[in-house]
Amino acid sequence: MPFLLTTAGSRGHLASVSETPPADATPDASTVPVSVYAKFETILQVRPDDIDMYQHVHSSRYMDYVLAARFDQMERCYEMPMSEFQRHGYGWFMAGTQMRFKSALGLGEHFIVRTWIEKFTLIGLRVQFEIDRKSDARRCCEGWFDYVMVSLETTRAVRIPEWIRAKYSI
Image 1 (cartoon, rainbow, N blue to C red):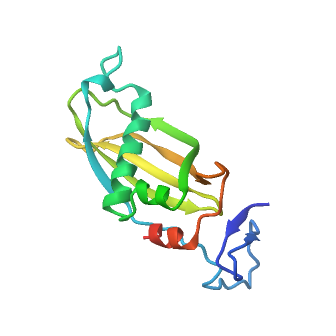
Image 2: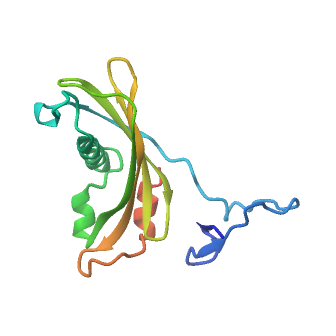
């Protein structure tokens, strides 16, 4: 049975979710999850060391591009850089990713990395991304990353504090 994080109750517990709601069910605003978050963009350029033997960007570099864009956007758009997480004793661990490659990028090309938070969980979040070539807006890569918040002291997963959730819920 699927689960969903809600704001029902005083501590934001997991609530069981039915695949098909009863016909007479009226959603209560406190139990409807927020699913639309702001999208942010960062423009980057393909560097010579990004190119593989086939003369296009190596697949592993797309992960680097998304991480570089998120690092930029955490500071510029959310106004909470990674260093602030560290000052509070938190870090982010990448738990999983999926990337779909659609069109190759070449040396010197500029591209837009667009990212947004798709959803929060108790201990993490999913970041969606799109990478589009700037010159023709063609989609080059898309996918998602799952991150888990960890305590730097224990290196164990921890619940995302409400103040961080609120800061990133834009």
